Image (cartoon, rainbow, N blue to C red; front, side):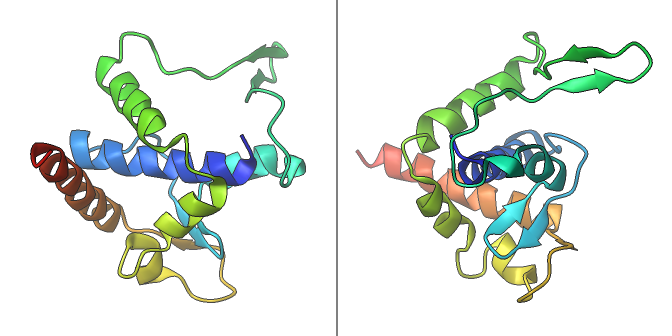
Length: 146
């Protein structure tokens, strides 16, 4: 998985979590950059891979003990793990650029705030929640018609 694909999947999972649980998936705000929504800390951690697949896991370092850990969603957080598995199942087959295009939808959260050349404009959680609530409802409606 490339950094671009990871950033888009994390943003989509963030949107699904807002829509379903009404809460953020993580505390960091999402920024509107040229290629779509970005979690800056995630971008910073994996940007050295550029367009190549990511070859290592994310790690946290405790600077007091120098112990490193891999961040994980607790296994008893059933709802979050379910949302993440559904997002992965639904979007994993899309190439990074297709996911990028999805995040650029007309009147979507990114489109509403992005200004050419800017990188620090924050997406509004209420816009993200509204967008993914509508998107999930459309998916559910389409599945009922099958």
